[in-house]
Amino acid sequence: MSSVNPTASEDVIRLFFRTQVNNLDKLLDLVFSTFRAATNGQPDISDWAIEVNTIFLVSLLRTLFERLS
Image (cartoon, rainbow, N blue to C red; front, side, top):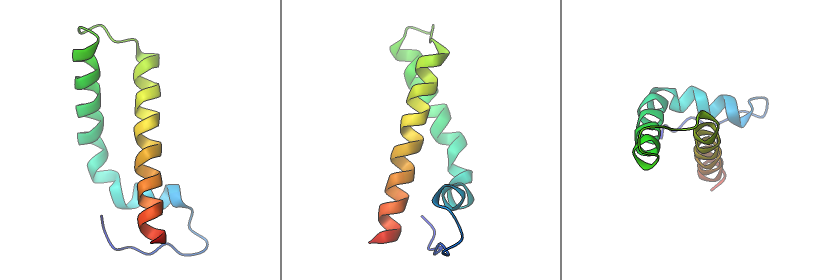
């Protein structure tokens, strides 16, 4: 992760996307291919959306905790 320090006026989600946007395509491709394999190639997109949201939140929290420590 880059060493960008958030300012008081910058929210954490914008900081996350500003510093990690280059990695999101790789992460989402990996998640979707793993999910597709686990569902025998017939994924329900709503389940995939929940998984992507979970990964986003975990990544966001990790970024936040790294910034605070």
